[in-house]
Length: 112
Length: 113
Image 1 (cartoon, rainbow over the protein chains, first blue to last red):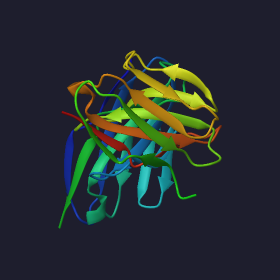
Image 2 (cartoon, rainbow over the protein chains, first blue to last red):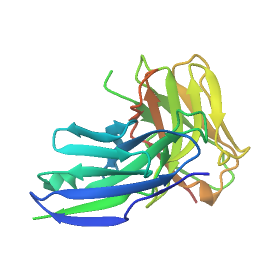
Image 3 (cartoon, each protein chain N blue to C red):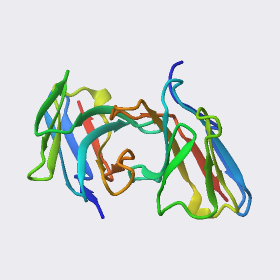
C-alpha cells in the first residue's frame, strides 16, 4: 500500500517563510503534487514534481528527493490569505496511475 | 467555461434513500475523477474515467456506489441506500491527457440523517 506523512498543523507569522514536509511510501512512484484548500473550498493545484529538485512558482516552491521518498512545499513572504490546508499527493502504481493519493493535510495558520 | 461544476452543492437525505450527484468537467478534459473527503482528511480516490470508460474503482467504492459518464462529458455518482457513514464532501476533478494537474469542482456536501 501507500502512505503519506505530513505535519497536522503549522503556525507562522505574516511575512515569514514556512516549510511543509511530506514523506511517502508507495508501490511505484510517478510524482508528488501539492494542493491548497481553503475552508469550504475546493483543492487547488499548486505544484508537481516528477524529478528530483526544486520547482519554483512565485512565492511557492516545491522540492522532491525520490531517493529519500521526501518532498516539501516552501511558502515565502507569507500572507494572511495563505492560511489554508495544504495536501501532498502522490501518483503511483497502486491504482491506474492517474488518480491521486492524498495525505491528511497540514493546516497552516498565518498570524499577524 | 470557468471550471468544473458540481450539482447540487448540498444534499440532505434520510438514511436509506438514494442520491445522485452530477459533475460537469472542463470541456476539453477527457479524464474525470471522483473523490470523497471527510473532515480533517485529504480527498480519497473513488473512481476514474477516461472519456466514457470507467478505468479504475477504489476498494472504498462499495456496491451501493455507481458512477457513469455516458457520453464522455458530464458524470453522475449515485449512492443507493445511503448510510450515515456516507456523509462527506464528494469532489469531482478533471484533467487533460498528458498532464498532472487535476482541477477540482466545489464539491457536493452530503449529509445523511
